[in-house]
Image 1 (cartoon, rainbow, N blue to C red):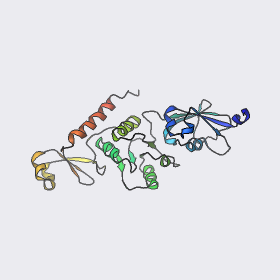
Image 2 (cartoon, rainbow, N blue to C red):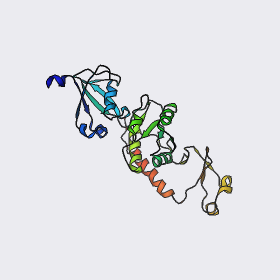
Image 3 (cartoon, rainbow, N blue to C red):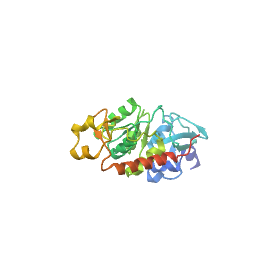
Image 4 (tube, one colour):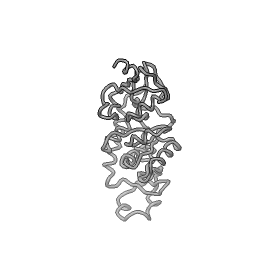
Length: 248
């Protein structure tokens, strides 16, 4: 038995990452048979943990890249990404999969550059995320485990409000509320009532004076019946950001 253990690789997963493990492995240490060909990253992902969710791999106390070929008897600490998470880009913008439409609209409400289409397959999402240097947000672990994905994040929460809080805490994107189109992600420009009068309903013309128009799709916005609910979402997000500890 001792000889068999000497041929094994011991992986210690941080509590935050055990969510991804199969139920039989949801304990502190997982033992796997080491071989001479599989990388450390392959071993981690074979257990269901996408590398996008891993911050540091530490082998026998030393930080080690996912490309490392582990030797029998090594001990690996698998640590989560820090919050806020550093990105390989000098900007923070997102691409969301088909199941995160409400989250996409809320991020756009906050002025966060957020691409979303309700009819995209996995290969096209992968290509767009890398080509446009976007963080791919999804609940699909398989999509996040694709080789070569530059940046991604698994959204764990179910409710849109909780999903938004999760993304803001993890990635800390700059907020510019009321500057993006909720429908297409285009940038909004303030316009006068006269510029958009012909497209307005009589009641809207009579009751509202502040308007914005999307530079991309031409959609017109004004502080209508849903404004108070949207304003509450914005206030809560701003309050959360302002209460975030200073990383310095």
